[in-house]
Length: 255
Image (tube, rainbow, N blue to C red; front, side):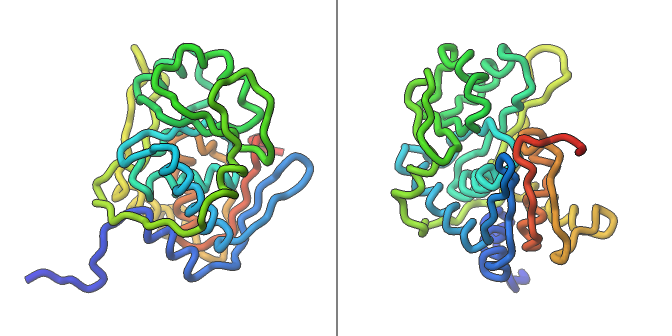
């Protein structure tokens, strides 16, 4: 006999929906230049739906890799959830790797889309001609940016044209959700794939007393880069609990 009480797949979708349902007014803040961008989990949820619609319209299908080349921000958090919850794979690119390794990683992962912060465009411009699978480059900026890159799109313009509602698929918990590549190893970097289940369970472990004891009363500021090991799962755990989140943007310095 099976126990079926509250039986559901351990994917990132319940984490996303819980934050929206129980903490719609809790704030997510990001340092943007000298100012702060602030919005709520309700706003976040709607934009995650818009982003999923954008990616679907651009031809992203289940299992496709969507890369991020970005700092710690609310837009990166939107990608953390929209990409895997629609069935694609969020591939965080380490912006501190040398160009030859970035080229290898992007081609090896067969990234279909790259979402990039404006300040990092010069890094991508240097290697773009060597990328074989990238079809679209989405610039995470308020307005269109002048760049030498081909096939660039503006994040906010894309979202503005889409519905907030997205028909989230029912995914198996063992579906790939995200991937990172190793560094400091011999030979080429090796791809490491995270399942939805592993990320869900890791978020729960972070919240435990013998983890870091995160609580819904806390404010979480992920300073570990979101492009490195998924910021050790803190953004997912904080979203699971509906914590207030504060992102430092590119200001990843102790001060």
